[in-house]
Every structure is written in structure tokens, then in C-alpha cells.
Image 1 (tube, one colour):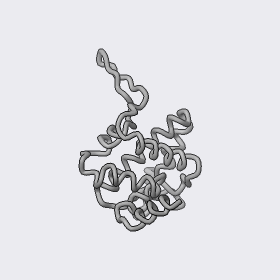
Image 2 (cartoon, one colour; image 1 turned 90 degrees about the vertical axis):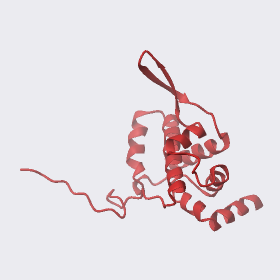
Image 3 (cartoon, one colour; image 1 turned 120 degrees about the vertical axis):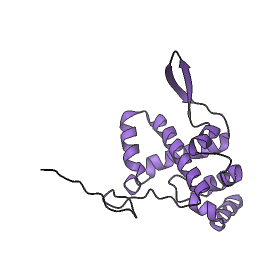
Image 4 (spheres, one colour; image 1 turned 60 degrees about the vertical axis):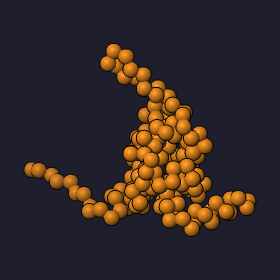
Length: 162
């Protein structure tokens, strides 16, 4: 209990943790663990490099010009990978998908794949978003309004040609 309160206090006081906690599936535990593991994220050139370090990318097997993707590599920081997967599972089961642009993608993925595959794919996407938020020094901007339009962006309208 005391350790949890200390982590929550640290997360409230740290600006980078506050930005990270705007990402769905990322709470005080994930935010503080990510800051402790990668600091400002500058060690990685892009989000895919970060998720590869976490072990959240598929293993590639290539021969004769044909590429096949296997399961996740499970290399790198096992603790942080586990936290991202638990956060993704929580968002998948309990999150308000209509509030986030990622919701439509996740609904489509749930129809096409097994729930555990969808959870790991979501963890990969959330880890990339978290890296972008951390490395770019900006807030998460993937929220949608009630009509599915991105908050803070101009409304897109369909044009009908007659």
C-alpha cells in the first residue's frame, strides 16, 4: 500500500508521467516503470525500435524472398512488456473505445483475430504511442468526440460529386 501511494505521488509530480498517463492503458505503474527504464526515450530512434527492445514485435523468418511472421520475440524488458500487455488487456476489456481513435482499429482487430493476439497488438501500438508521447514531449492526441472526429482537428466532410 505504501509503495503504491509513493508511485502514484511520483507520477503526479512528474510532468513526463502525467503525459504518459493520458495514453489509454497507461497508469502510474506503467508510466513510472517506463521513465525508470528509458528516461526520455532518446535511446530509440522510433517507436518500432522501442517495441523491439520490449519484445513486442513479431519474429521474422525469411527464406527465398518469402517473409513469415511468427510470435512476439519476448526479448528485452520483461517487466515493462508485461505491464503494457496488462494495460492493453484492461483497455480492451474496460476502455471506452468510442472516446479514442484507436477504438475503431481495435473493433476491427477483435473481429479478425484471437483475443490474445489482439491484446498483444494493442500493447505494441500503445507502447509506440507512449514512446512518441515521451520522446516528443507532447500529450496524447488520439481522443475523439461523440461523432468519431478527432478532438482539436477540423471536421472532415464527405464530398458528393453529381
